[in-house]
Length: 115
Image (cartoon, rainbow, N blue to C red; front, side, top):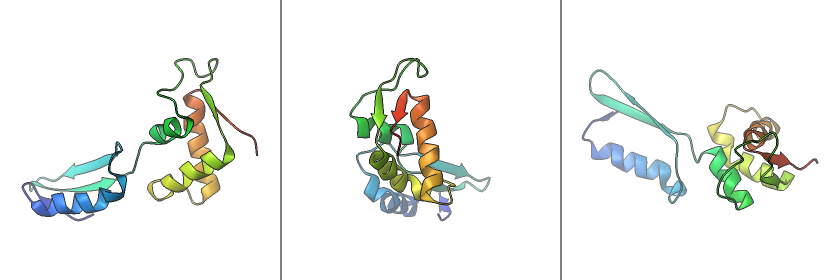
């Protein structure tokens, strides 16, 4: 993450390089603009809910997640999503990231398969 001028092709090139493995997906990007009119960015990867929906092959989560369940993530799917999100989270290990993903899934009305 470098600092770029507002009309800089350097930013475009850096952004394209940073996101090349994520093309075709929605991507979370945080951009900071400074008083001197320069800016930087940080890519936070594909949103977790998008990865869950894709894994389950569904279009949206439940409107009433406590009552209406929309699917069940296997431990293997949970691990795969956690591995994809690992570098973009504050989790210390894969198990911590799996817990974060499981929490997001539950809030969407997705059940988690017990190990």
